[in-house]
Each structure stands twice: as C-alpha cells, then as structure tokens.
Amino acid sequence: MIEAMKSIVRRGLQCHLPVNCVTKPGFSLLYQMHVLMRESWLWAMRVIWSEPLFRSQCESVGARFQMEQLPYIVGRGRILIGCGVRLSGKSSFAFSSKHGGATLVIGDRCFLGHNCAVTVAKEIIIGKDCLIAGGVRITDFDGHPLDADDRRTGQPAPIDAVRPVVIGDDVWIGHGAVILKGVRIGNRSVIGARAVVTRDVPEDCVVAGNPARVVKSLSYPLRNAS
Image (cartoon, rainbow, N blue to C red; front, side, top):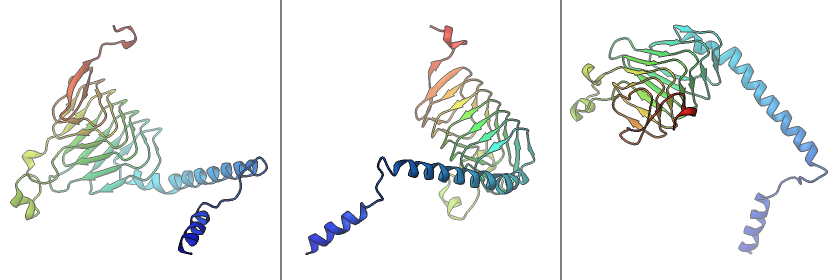
C-alpha cells in the first residue's frame, strides 16, 4: 500500500500539460510573451527606480552608462564612473569609513560582470576599456587586522595596511579572480580565471595561479606574433 502511494506521488510530481505538435505553438507564443513581460518589467524598474537610485550615490557618471540591477552599496565613499561603462547583473561596492575618505574610479568603456565585489578603504582605480568578468573581488585592504586581539575587540585594520589598487587600461580580469591590496596591473595585461594577484603585474602579460605568476608575455599585434 505504501509503495503504491509513493508511486502515485512520484507520478503526480512528474505531471505536466502535454506539449505536442498541437499545443507546442501555443506554449511557444506564451513563452515569448513571458520573456517580453519580464524584460519590460526589468527595463521599467531600471529606468524609474534602480538607475536613479544608483546615480544619486555617485559623484559623477559619464554618458552612455548602462546597468542592469541596483548595485549593493555598503558605507559611503566617492564613486566616479566614466563614459560608456556597463554594469552587468548585480555588483557590490563596499566602503570603509574607518580610514578617511574612500574613492572608487571606473574608467571609460569598462565592463563589470555579475557578482563583482569591490571593497575600498582608500582608493581603487580601474582604467579605461577594462573587461572584468563575473565574481571578481578587488580590495585595497585586508578587511580586519591580522592581530587576533584587535579582531576580537572590533578594531579596524591599521592604516598602514591600506594600499591603493590601480588597474591599467585594456586589462582583462577573468572570472573569480581576486585582486589584493597594493597591486598595480599594467596596461593590456590578462588575469586568468581564479587567479589571486598579490603583487604588481607588468604590462602586456598573462598571469595565472595562486599566487598569480606570469605565464605568458604578449606582443602586439597578436595576429602577427609567432
């Protein structure tokens, strides 16, 4: 009896309206209507709600700015966004108020993928034409002091442990990479997926690994390189 009831329940969970040559055109039309309604709703929310709210938190925003979802902002800091910047999905920007003013600069024509997180205590500068994939983490301090007693008492990271991050122009940062404090990334370099960058990266190279190391030098134009 119990097994029969379990069988009935399993079949019930697998039930659906039949999709065949007769019903498929109708369901296909309904799917297109569903997508249109969803995209229209998201567009309207961005135009009348998300983008105005985000712009109100920025010191400057250049022309042709595009965003999808309202970024999650923690703390107060200066946000300067260049022309043609695109924020895909939902990013987060966190500012520490315990180390004075914090500034985030995103250069012209940059792209930030979904779920990027930028944590600023002093200054993070992202150059022009950078491609930053989803899940990237960039921070200019450790977040907490290394000393366990200071962490236990809620002390902030010491000011001498805060070091700005500067990312050059045309840099490509792969999915899930981590850029740590004090790092300077040279123009046109590529950061491999999941790389952990703890030291400066020269121009025109590819780095990968944990900690990230140079694995390839780039020469331009690449199509003519051997």
